[in-house]
Length: 258
Image 1 (cartoon, rainbow, N blue to C red):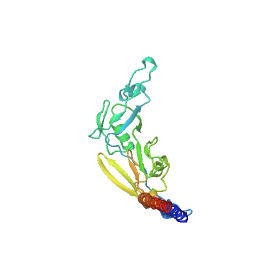
Image 2: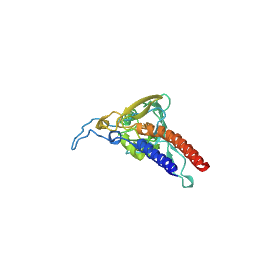
Image 3: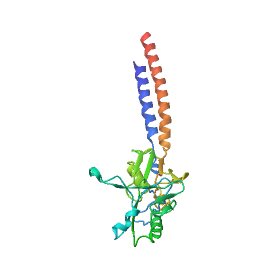
């Protein structure tokens, strides 16, 4: 019986040791903005400046003091029959980077910001309208957050901008196993994928050109060394415990026979 107890203690000790090693993560791996000082002020001219891309869905409404004059520039679908309310048609940026706008025709807006697009439209509307008011909204502003976060998924952005920190907040923050020093941002530019990496442990992320996300960006958080080690040790621990169990069983059989 004494031998059996020794083996049992060995198995328990082995499990505790492996679990402790697997769960170890240093402070430098998990703390955000480690180099930020108290009362430090960071001045940055980094601002969101999203550009329209191919396949974007955009809502555009044109209005003037003369309501009848702006009617041809706003297309609605549906009718008011049966209590239904007509909905204004959205515009899709085609493969040529253009939208087909009423009366005016095709307008190239890919790689233009919303403000630049408004100015372009206002110029083209001059022959038809006096001081038009242009309201514009990107309808497919979504970001996807994957990897070592608590709630990975695709999130709709209601406003006109979102930061990488806000996107991570939507995903309920990184898990303890997320690599904060090397967060990957995958950005699509009209079919071409561009990869950027940022370091959340440094204050410099706040002035990074990738601090503000664009529509359809993907944020991927890699597992850190602790997570990789833990995964490896889980397999090794399973093998070790299996071997220990076999040895324990063999010992019990030998003691029983004797």
